Image (cartoon, helix red, strand yellow):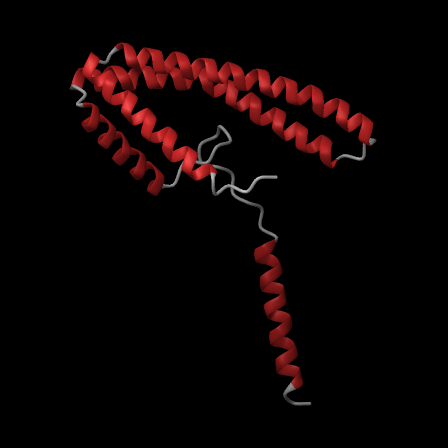
Length: 167
């Protein structure tokens, strides 16, 4: 009897502490646009890859500055499209989880998928335009090296696809 009271009290205290910690709402992302900033590790890797890419293509400082300017402009063009895609995908998820009939779900999701595909095609067009802008600042030798880099990337993606599970 003497041991059960302290054990019961400690279990009660732990339960109350755990429930108060779990009841905390998640913190909002620090940058008010709804996206959490990438972890520093990813930013570090991106900078290292960018440096390696610049060195491999032997880009001049002027070319690097132009490429960065083009990349920022492209990002500004594509960001609203990507946000709209995410909103439509969220809506798609809501429809799938709703209590609508299967026929109504299918009808609404089909329309959303068509809209998402159109937005993804628009984003692809912007990416292609960005690549053309980048290639326009390169010399003939740099374009050849870029073609090699693209071929290596395609081979690597193909290799990775072998390991992805197919449904």
